[in-house]
Image 1 (cartoon, helix red, strand yellow):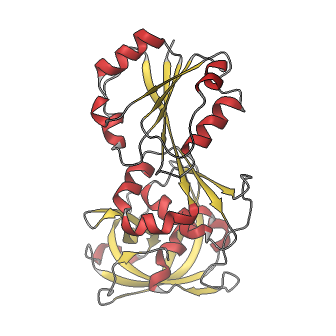
Image 2: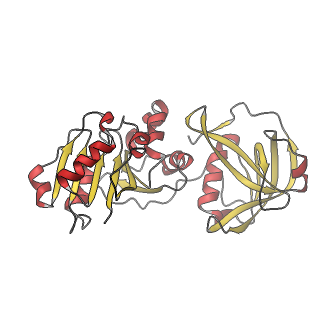
Image 3: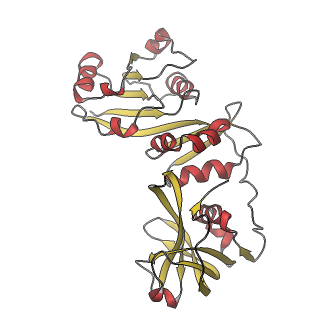
Length: 313
């Protein structure tokens, strides 16, 4: 039988401990399991060892990320023989270092879960982007908690999706219930048949068009970006895009849209262009859903933008 390892990431006061305690004590996730909890960060909220033991869960502590090694995990296997392992990872530890660690036979990392305090996310993404990147880039599920009505959902979502497009995101209100509020009002009039996307709204537009392509079908759109290269499938297809800074200037993620125009063969990589055209939907077999295709009617070369990076402010 496999022993499954779950990594819980997040900064101090992000809600990791509460999330883990709820998983152990209020769900069936630990039913018929022998669980081991490895804690590498101790915040304001503590674990009750007797309570954990009542759910067949042992607990051990790590004070240095250099402890991650095959020998360490092998010793845990011999001592506890768990069927599943929860690792509460210190928010300043390197997730890559843990994931790269060799494991005992039949031990396997299966999921990374991240908690983020939505009320402080803006400060972290501005001042500690590298650490946010480390936590989010591997996340299968990310929970924004303490979301209030004053926070822009698109700001939270788009910054994470730029780092990890496939990550599932859940939003929790301050009372712990799942937040079902509608998307924020977009910075352009989505009801209009013609949209001229401002340069600072490029990222918001492309991310929203990816998530909700049906909203943009048959709309005429004008936007500016770089010619990234030819599309591998569509004849006369190409990508217009810009880079979003996900960690630092040396670590960016491309955000863009597929376009079609007969002049694609004449365009030069990294050339700045303005395109205008009608959006149609096309089913992408690899992705498994419809995507927006901009059938370009007008294209022209423009000077480079003053700020070439995408932001989600």
